[in-house]
Image 1 (cartoon, rainbow, N blue to C red):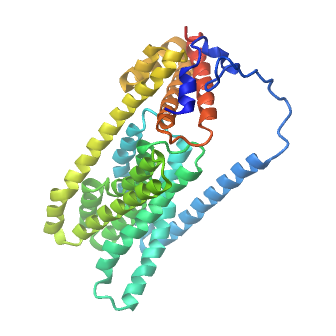
Image 2 (cartoon, rainbow, N blue to C red):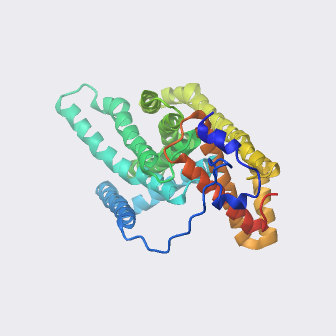
Image 3 (cartoon, rainbow, N blue to C red):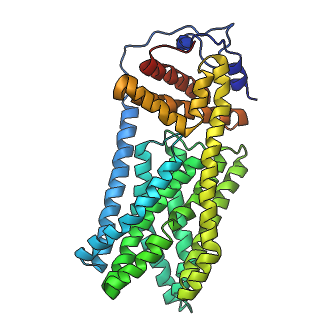
Length: 411
C-alpha cells in the first residue's frame, strides 16, 4: 500500500469540514496551517490563452473537416440523397450512443469530451481515412496489383481507420484535463468515436446505394450496416480503448506500450475480418456473421455488463477507508456502490431540496466515484502525478456537496 494511502488511513475521523486545516495525506501530529486565500488576481494570462487557443484550434479543425466532408459528399451525391442517407444513418445512433452512455453511469465523463470524441470520429477520422485510403488505392492500381479493391478493404482500410480513430482516444488520454482512468472510460470514448465514424461513413454508403439501386438498395444497405452491424466500428475501436484503459493501470512504460499496441492490433484484425466477410458474397457474409461476428458481439455486451458491475464493487471497496476515517458514512458508501440506490438518492434530494439539491447529490456521487477510482490507482501504485492534491480537492468537493443537499457534515 502506498504512503499516500497509509497516511489517509491514519487521519483522524472527526468532522470532515475541518479539511481546511488537516487534509488527506497530513498526519494529525503535524497539521497544515490554514492559509488565507489571496485576493490578488493572477497576473499571467497563460492559462486563459492556452484554453482559448486549444478550443479555437479544435473548433477550426472540426469546421475544416466538416467542409471537406460536405465537399466529398457533394461530389458524389445529390443534396436530397445526402439528406435521406443522413436520416437513415441517424437511426443506429439511437441505439449505439445510449449504450455507451449507459456504461458511463457511475462516473460520467464531461460532456465536452464526449462531444469531442463523436466529432473526432465523424469528421477528422473520416476525412483523414478518405484521403489516405484513396491515395493507397491509387498506388495499388498504378502498381497493377492483382486485386487492389480487396487488398485496400481488408488490409489498408482497417489499419488507416483504426489508427485515426485510436488517435482520438489517445489524445483524450494524454491531454484531457480529466484523464482516462480505466477501461470503462476508454471504451466509452472509443465507442463514441467509432459511432461518429460509422455515422459519416454510412451516409456515403447509403447514398451510393440510393443513387445506384434506389429504395431497394437503401433497404439492403441499411439492413447490413444499420441493423446487422451497427456496433461494428464502435466495437473495433473499443479494443483500442480497452488497451489504453489497461495502460492506465500498468506501471511499466513498456507494459503501457504493449497494452495500447495489443488493443490496436485487435481492432485492426476485427475490422479486417468484417471487411473480408463483406467481400465473400451474401452466403459467405451470413455464415461469417453467424459463426463469429454475433458471438463476438454478445461477448462484448457481456463484458460491458461485467465491467459496470465491477466498477460498482470497486467504488464500494475503495470508499470504505474514507468512511472509516469519517469523510463518508458507511451508508453513503453502500448507496454509492449501486446504480439503483444512487438514483433513489437523487430522487430523495430533489424531493426535499428541489433541483439544486438534486444537482448537488449528483455532483456528490460523481466526485465520490472519481475519488474511489483515484484511490484504486493509488493502491496499485499507478496514480498520476498530483494524485494527492486531486484527492484533497475531491474530499473538499464531497464535503461541500453534502452540505448543500443535507445541511450537515458526517457525524
